[in-house]
Image (cartoon, rainbow, N blue to C red):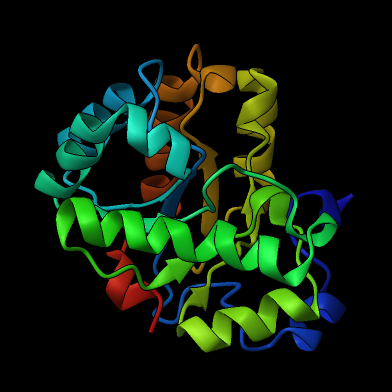
Length: 211
């Protein structure tokens, strides 16, 4: 049951150069798949109200449609990271295709915002040795997680269960910036923040958490 929420230790050891938990024993909030009209501003408002910084693993095609939201993320002091251009499974692409999915996102951020991307997360958390080699070539750090909230199932009870049972002081938490969870994302995020403080945990900023 635990491995539904926390990646197996063996996988973490095999890919020890990937980041699986924070380095400073502070919680890091991460959001995949955005930006979206349905969820991004809701997330940003909760983060701003709680004076927290997060890392957004954006999809290039969503980025193109919602550049204003990306600018808002940057203006609020958050970190933008690479979640590929089209959210395709890299394990089903050849080297050229997977390379283009990753590098094109970095190029887009540089072109639009003169922003150098440092971090990457593979779509659906799926990767292989080829992914690892390509990330090394691009000098990108792969940021995984140690707490999956299942917010994309749009069931606040499942989010609360994951937080109540598996939240740790060094958690990298995965939420989603998508229409799938837009109905519950404010409550899910607020609940997680509140429970973290009740447990005596603190939140960190991306750069410090991912050293």
